[in-house]
Length: 295
Picture (cartoon, one colour):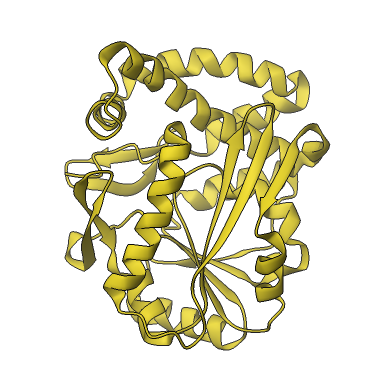
């Protein structure tokens, strides 16, 4: 879980590698159900011990979703619990238990056709659901995925997960290094017909953001992904992997812009936020930004 700071997200995760390693071992020796059961205790701990995150989720439920106090209190527990479930599922699926889950796809054929086109693709996600749940379905395409992200202590978490589950293949383009180096790596990947992936609902610096109404109030979004999509005019798609009842994951793919389509930065952001808002309203307990997104 990401820590919050007075200015918003600070790029670091609560729990880190130890928390992931613990659940990896619990799944290995106790099974998925045991991990789910223990998760309830972890949630009870986190609600009072992560006050900023808890306040952010509470305000999200009350102000953005319009829940009453009792419904918001239940949603608060379920929000933390769903987040923990996605971590457990990611480890379990990567560790060879994919047959214990059910997977459904929206617009899959269209998405695969685009991946096979040989074009560089800008792929936008968000902190919803569990995108890693679909890693095994990317197959050979996974080696062409470049995830642009803050790679500080996430590197430790990734090392723990990969060591115990064998989930690997995609590459990381860190944004905590020199900006020019990041931009060059992104351009090389796109020119080479690879896929560059951003999480479009989180930023590090408020100086490089765009404002857009989201869930009824104005919020900031990172400028970079939408500026790149507008300038480079490469195909832009969104990808979400959402958890449903009965250990089911639904993968949703949607093309926001086609190659050569002339969209302004604001137009591309508008398409993205409309897509994201539809997903968040459908799965309100699976939007995992644990800080005041509208501050």
